[in-house]
Length: 360
Image 1: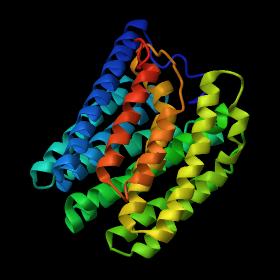
Image 2: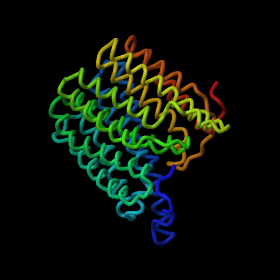
Image 3: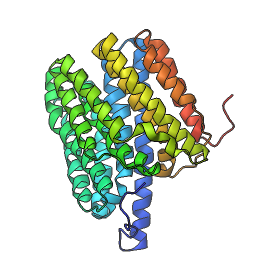
Image 4: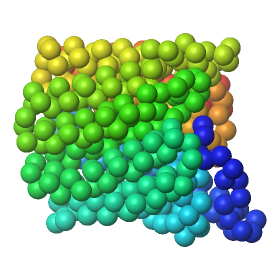
C-alpha cells in the first residue's frame, strides 16, 4: 500500500521514533479491543430486543471506533510527517471517539461533540497531510477520508437532534463508514491488483453516499435509496471491482483478497435487490452486514495484525464471506439467524489470524 513514498524518516532521533511506534501500537490495540467489546454489547442487545442499545453500541461504538482505529493506522505515515505532536493528537482523538457511545447511550447533553470535535480535527490533519502527497491516487484517497470525517462531524448535531440514536447510526453508516471504505479501497485494492482506478468516481461515490444519509435523516427514503445505490455503483466501476482476478498471484492471501471483492460485488447486487423488494431497514442492514462487513472480512486479517503488531497465522478461508453474505440475506427473515451467522463469521475471521490449532 502506497501511503507516501520516501517518508521513512519522519522523526529526528531513534528514541522518539521508538516511543511513538510503541504508543501507536498500543493505541491501535486498545482501539480494536474496545470496538470489539462495543460490538459484543450491540449484538447482545439484539437478543433482548433493545434497539436503542443495539444502534448505539453497534454503529457509533463497534463499527465506527474499529474503522477509525484502522483509519488512524492507515493515515499514520501522513500524520508522522506532521510531527510527533500531531500523531499523539490522533491518539487522543481515538480516545474521544471511544467515549462517544457511552455518553450517547446515557443521554448526556451535547454528547455529539465527542464525535464532532475529533472528526473535524481528524479531517483537518489528514487533509493537510494529504496535500503533501504527490501520488494522485493516494492524495485522492486521503482527501476523501478527510472529507467524510468533516461531513459526518458537521452533520452530527443535525442527526442527533433530529432522530437521536437512530439518526446517529444512519449518519455514521452512510456518511462515514461507507465513504471510508471507498477512500481506502480506491488505493489499497487498485494498488494490490495493479489497476488504474477512475479517480473522479471516488469523490462522486463519497458525495452520493453522504447525500443519501441526509435524505434518509429527513425521511426521503426513495431519494436516499437511489443515492446510496448510485454511490455503490460508482465505487464498483471506479475501483474496477470486476477486475479482481488480477489480484490472484498464486498466494493464498491474494486469492482470499480477490475472492472477497467478488463477494462484495454480490453484496452490492443484493442491495439493489433489497431496494426493489423490501424496506429501507433491510437496505441499511444489507449494507452494514454485507457491504461493510465483507470489507472488514477482506482487510482485517491482513491489516489488523500489521497495524497492531501481532502475529498472523494467515489461515485464509472463504468461510467469513459465505457467512456474512448469508447473514445479510437472512436479516429480513430472522434477526436471530442473521446474528448467529455474523457471530460465526467474526469467529472465522479470528481463526484466520490466531496462531492456534485450527477450529474444528
